[in-house]
Length: 111
Length: 114
Image 1 (cartoon, each protein chain N blue to C red):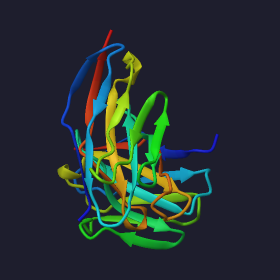
Image 2 (cartoon, helix red, strand yellow; image 1 turned 45 degrees about the vertical axis):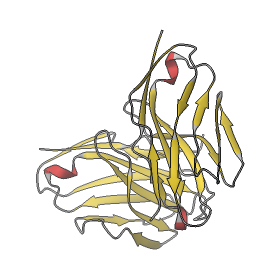
Image 3 (spheres, rainbow over the protein chains, first blue to last red; image 1 turned 60 degrees about the horizontal axis):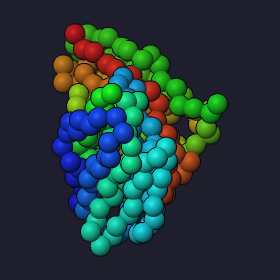
Image 4 (tube, chains in turn yellow, purple; image 1 turned 30 degrees about the vertical axis):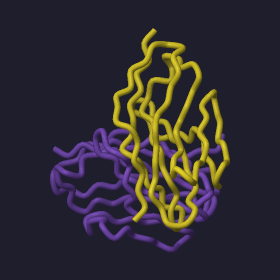
């Protein structure tokens, strides 16, 4: 079945550090891939998405590229801010737009 | 702004006492979803409606039901809440059922069972 594996957290960084959160997936067919962000006590917000191989999603300085050959969708940001502290979920969209999420990675950014 | 609204944000109920959570949307989307998210875990899909068609996930307990009286509203009913049902319940919508469609989430309702 479809599944998503993402790196365990928490990830602790200093402000302006480079961020990578790894995400790999297992899926039949060609799913769409998403990164969602969840701030404390809030629902999920779409951060970026990619719908086919080699697509790059980007938003607010975050980027991720849909790599079919390595079944990966790693999230990167060149310079994180304290306001980026949140939980990040990688997800794939399977049949009938069912979202399957990874376990989430908590990011803490310190000044 | 078009949005997904969930009320209340916090709900306290007693063990075994039926409870209903509500979700409304101003996006005029065709699909509405309910997810359960337990502490420090990923959201898990319970069921979804595509228009009036109800689609239940195979492992969703019978204790959980849903109603969608019109396009804008969708309700989650928990018939006899147990302590293990304490969680954040997230409502989401998408324009259609295609896998490329973005799902838009509400802020969630945190359910506490005493």
